[in-house]
Image (cartoon, rainbow, N blue to C red; front, side, top):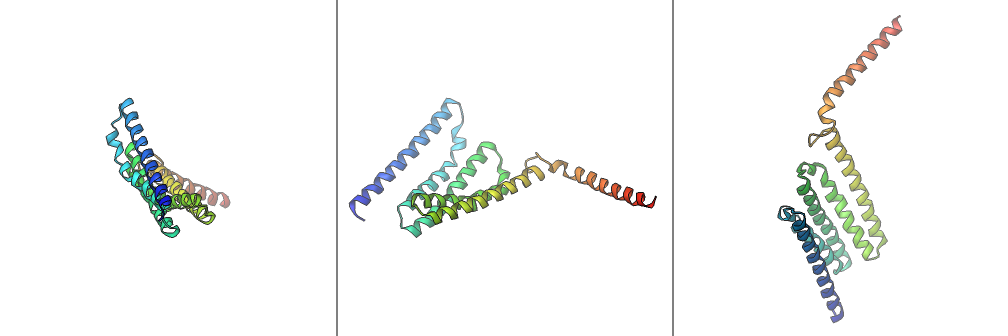
Length: 184
């Protein structure tokens, strides 16, 4: 590695560290201003920040290794983001469908970002396709678990059995009426 490449790598690392420190400082400042117990919610950043750092490291590696590390960084960062949302909402049961955001969505985001920054249209397309699939799975699973089953106590799940019984009763009545109607 020549001196210029080494200098560029150090400059990027310092910039990333600087941005990380600014964001962390802003989080603590907002916590103080709005009397939010930031410590209760800051722990997911111990997963998010390493995920972001992995991605920055991926950009400095050769293409194939960098691509693999970008996908791993997408997974790690997405896990951290999900943990952050769950700690803010106290909706831990959402793991039953949030896994779709980790893989394939997180993998796709890492691949898409890496492809964008490395100007690789094939990686961008693959990443976008994975994101679409992952988000589709997430939405379908979220609707199923939250609205139909009522995972968190809200949704049709609490009404599913009564509605099913009523629906079956109507079907039987209609069949009976139609059968008797034709006899007349």
